[in-house]
Every structure is written in structure tokens, then in C-alpha cells.
Length: 132
Image (tube, rainbow, N blue to C red; front, side, top):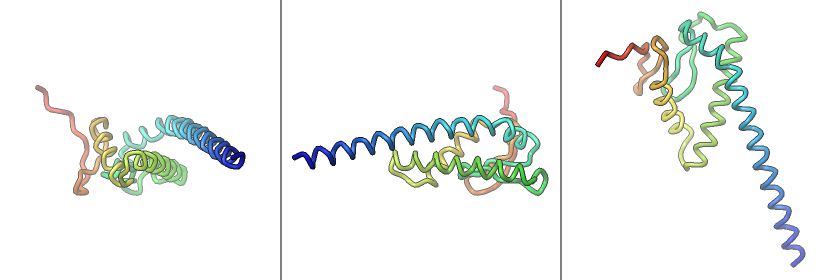
């Protein structure tokens, strides 16, 4: 009986530590997203990067592709992949599905002039919506 109690206590402790680690990672992810946001917005405004149909950033050409900018985009995409993976596990689907859904959200929220990729892979710049 004591053995079962010890095992249960160890498992509960491990789950608690895992939950704390996940929460800490989530806070760190949010901080990294916020730190990169101004730089990424500038890259989008300068038309250096666009949002693909899988929810990731892609350089649109060689312009702006400095070593620093490449690292920023890679870090953003890695963190997005982590978040998509966590969501995929929670809703029991593939990371790619989560990325596609996020890409649709990004498209809806994108600023006029930002480059986006449609569902079949064609690139376009977001236009001003037609007046009602």
C-alpha cells in the first residue's frame, strides 16, 4: 500500500512540475513573440516577408535577407511550430491543420499591403476592402 502511495505521489509531483514547465514555456513564448513583433511588422511592411498558407513566415526574395533577419524569422517560425504542436495535441489533429487554420486567421488580420499566400499557393498583396 505504501508503495502505491509513493508512486502516486511521485507521479502527481511529476505532473505538477510538467504543468509548471509548460506554463513557464508559454510565458517565455509569449514574451519572445512580443519582442519580435515590431521587427516582423517592419519586414512585412517593407514587403520582405509574407505569411504562407501553413501559418509561417517566408522571405519573398533576397531583399532584407540579412543574417539577423533570417534568425528572427527562423525563431518566429520555430515558436509558431511549437504552439501549433501544443494546439494539435489538445484538439487531436495534425500540426499542419492548425497551421492552415492559423494562416486563415492571419489573413483576416493582415494589414493592407502585406503579402499572403492563398490555399493553392498563389501569393498576393492584401487589398483595401471595397466600400459598402
